[in-house]
Image (cartoon, rainbow, N blue to C red; front, side, top):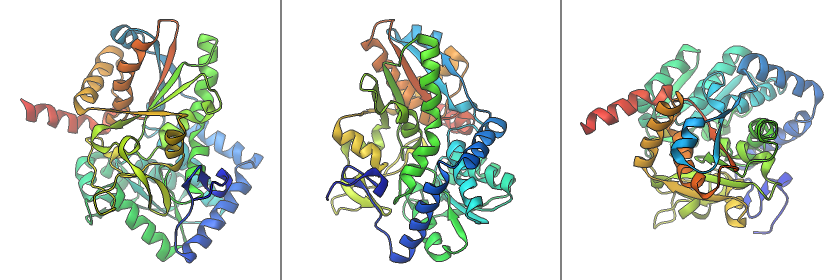
Length: 389
């Protein structure tokens, strides 16, 4: 495939838009409106006011003294997306897209969710802006994240169970995209991760980049320099691309993505098309998306954002896997050492920090992106512990 520019929806060979003509017209209009508003002073003023007054930004860059002592080597700083309203990074993108939907005159919002955090954030924004909200969620994920399902319903959303396929995130995306095709004239699809056809990956990155915009300034204020490395978990890729965005041009900063061993898309995937875009995909022997499973529901996706695919193949970022046992150890350690219970997704990044920190001396500094808090996972972890005893 010919290499084209990011503005056209490509990152190297990855990205693009492979959708029916009817849906392409919808996406073209969305891309035009996004380009119109993303640099509009009034739009950005309203967006920043929402982040400050509703989300609670900016969130801190917290020095993890006890975790640093436990791991040895570099100082570890935690970018605290867990302190956002609704408990995760998802709200950054949701507020931006919901404002865009409002500007475009949409009244019906649909979304997909895996771990439920994007669904909760979308339901929250729709309640605030007075919009109808439909959330598609895999049947298995609804069982694992029952508390988040209740939160979404409490906020006024209709949560639709998807039992086709594996009943997980990929299948929820399938159904949401079909809804958009069927109802494109009245519906805005508020996609939660840096995946999908153009302009979604670029749009999600734009709104999630607030994380690295803050952390870059905060690290300079605290350490007088840029971080030596930034570590973030990758599922679809939204929190990691936001954590990396303002460091992409800083060659001295290592960008380290972390995957579950059971769904190692960037480590084991091959180029293919999924959900209307091209990326690295875990495929079975017949070339279909392979079944995935992670104890962290938000990481159950056989593809990955096109920009992450390009960062991997170009060598600008590195991607590694961690095991379930390493994640559980990190989940407990951060809770006990720092009083911060992370989401299971975020615990993957904490687990990777144990491997990276000792590579440096104590003059170095790492940022670990804590993409969400662990309220949603405590019952699941409790059941995992009790089943083992």
